[in-house]
Length: 126
Image 1 (cartoon, helix red, strand yellow):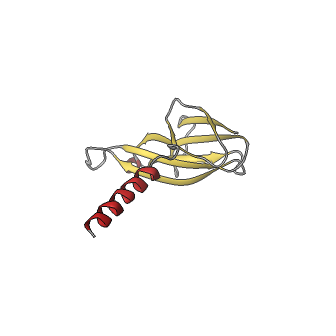
Image 2 (tube, one colour; image 1 turned 120 degrees about the horizontal axis):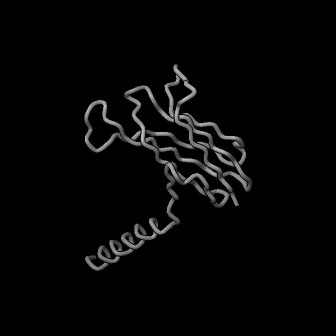
Image 3 (cartoon, one colour; image 1 turned 90 degrees about the horizontal axis):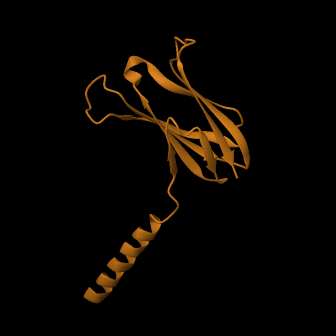
């Protein structure tokens, strides 16, 4: 019985190791404005943000048949202090081959301004 339990534990450990062997999701930042991914893959854009000031990244996608926003979340900064900034995490899914433009604006939704920070990502899906 002890041998069977040990063997089962080894098999479970191997299975758990194999689960993590899939292709890692690509992560992009502020300067990675040209993105190339395979159809069906996900990718993440991480940007500094501070929603406690009312500012956050808004997203517009030119062709949602090619790329869609799957998840948007905010990760608080390491200090945890009230009012401290963190990271806005945007997870996208690619749907089919083509090119899409992701336009992003860092703004207060109720107070858009001409000088709001803007980023543009060109996504090529193979």
